Amino acid sequence: MREIRTSLTSIVIVLLCVGTIMIYSASGIYALQQLGDSLFYLKRHLLFLFVGFIMTMVVMSSDYRDLRRWAKPILLFSLLTLILVLIPGIGKASYGARRWFKIGVFSIQPSEFAKLAVLVYVADFLARKQNKIKDFREGFLPLVSILGGFCLLILKQPDLGNAVLMAVIVFTMMFMAGAQLHHMGALCVLALPALYLLVVKVPYRLIRIMTFLNPWEDSQGAGFQLTQSQIALGSGGFFGVGLGHSVQKLYYLPAAHTDFILSIIGEEMGFVGVFTIIVLFMVFIWQGARIANRVTDPFGYFLSVGIVSLLGLQAVINVGVSIGALPTKGLPLPFISYGGSALVVNMMAVGLLLNISRIQDQ
Image: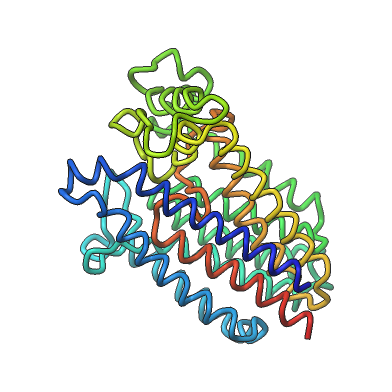
């Protein structure tokens, strides 16, 4: 699988390079006017990139199978961080959400690390209980209980996007392990009323759904972000207006260097740039699936499935939101969007995937 590892590594390096360039392009003017330093976000991104690189090297140099004995402690530690972040004075609140720990000048989002912790634990559980996964009490219920606890804590922040993403990843892994479809289907049906209330009874979420259905109806209000994203993508045409020449990043498109960085790529690099990014992610998912398909170790197999699902779903959702095909969710584009915690976790996830492939070849 050496050629697969080479392909995955090359794709991630290209995406990281594109992300670094586009973060500076999308944030430079804003950072200069608001913070007095056009390199503010770029320097922070490079620091997190360095941390992510170190963590990736550590992960790649070890044996992923050693994670099995640490799966429960990692899960419990992650659960503790999700509890602590909700406590005033410990967790940092911003724009009505309490999702971060403030450490010096940096903010760490524990829910990002929780996704990887849950993924590792679920992979270990499925490897141990693979012959009992069809049993509701011994195979299905324990995982659903743990998933429910984590999702409730993340919803409390509040962060519906990451909670739903975590649930979909775990269900994907359970499906691949052979879980009963009627168990998963019944749970999804039972969850629909709660999901309905989480959307309809929370004004800003309901506004997002209504805006998604017709953003141009209130293009100067609730639909401003989506319409500006579509304007950015449309303005780029086929080849784009040129690197650094985006107009939408000049206080028109909110979150230009984070959740909607793909729209700036579309404006500056055109359809060609966006299409290239999408193709790179498609090849990444395909190559990741090839690794999972060749792994004989159950723990490595389920871990591979979880990692590919984690990164692939985030990419699909971010692209869908940027083009207006999905309601707005605060999920970054892997390896490209600005966001330290997500970047480090995604790089560690890739390191794990490469580690699984390397050990499998031995």
